[in-house]
Image 1 (spheres, chains in turn purple, orange):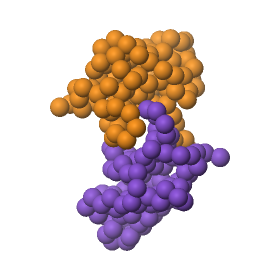
Image 2 (cartoon, each protein chain N blue to C red):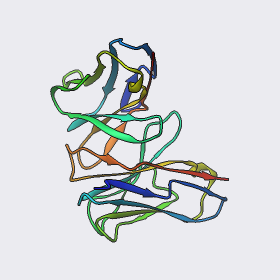
Image 3 (cartoon, chains in turn purple, green):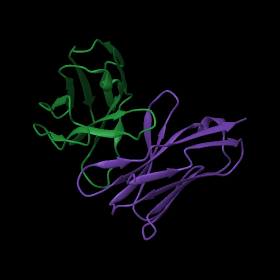
Length: 108
Length: 113
């Protein structure tokens, strides 16, 4: 079993829909990261959180440390949100462990 | 700031050939990482460095070597390329450990025939 599990693997939505991507992990962590990989391949960091909730524009990330679970929400989704969303956890030291990613497609 | 840059962007090698991938960052970051990304798998750590002159093995180090002679540069070498090393390689850097954001380079697509 992977240390970081994401669901769903693939998600197709219509423009305007509310989207949720889930991430579960099985190890103790110092922080959890959400990353976005654009269709062209570039990877950018969206959020880093160790407790509670963070919001940036239409994106919201939450984490429940006790349940070892995080969610990434996208409100009022748009075709430009189409990308792979990656969850990663930082454990002790300097390394991250990555989930396999969720491919999101938002249709107009 | 250019951020994190990688050279080259694309490369095709024949089995047994060698090459070096260059990662450069201009953010004065201490930590640098080399990952590979393969279909159906998450990013996997090859090697990393926590400072100039230091390197450490990651999850999948076999067949690769690295060097960090200057703080801003992290080199990944393939001494004798194999088809199993066909992948997209990403470099990343961050200020220090634990809870800092990682900044990624644009990736290098390597094909080994």
